[in-house]
Image (tube, rainbow, N blue to C red):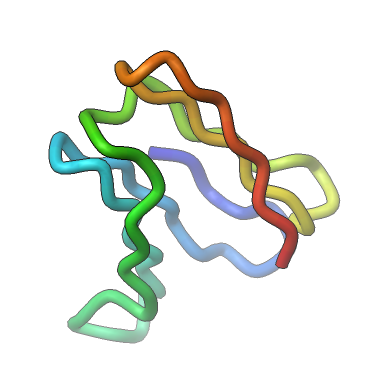
Length: 66
């Protein structure tokens, strides 16, 4: 789990390879995206809040631009 410093949205990695984005004002996730084919081992957001990096147990590292 990693917070986005620019807008406060929490990025949560899950065992099924998805990343969900949660807002404090929403009872449901804003986005649910499939990032890897297996469990995630790390999620990180850059200080500007423009990039999200994920690492999975499938031996892949991915960077997403918002």
